[in-house]
Image (tube, rainbow, N blue to C red; front, side):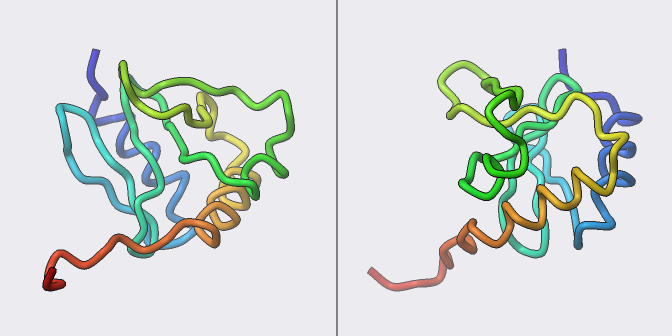
Length: 108
């Protein structure tokens, strides 16, 4: 099952207070970005956030984890984005640890 347009709009509304959040269609689902960094995936109407130490500290050891698709890396899973302040706090802390994507224009 792929993401619904309604769910993507809901995610964008809930996450935008954290920063400039956008989505890009990829592999039939969506990647999501915040302020120029890849943050995770949105698949099957679930948000999969890249794992970081900051995310682990905020989410605790009972954090829900899962795989966005077979062969993907283990991610944190947000099924409920209703606590917007907390979710945005986790996103901001995660963003601080993640690198910017490498430029595709660099010579090898």
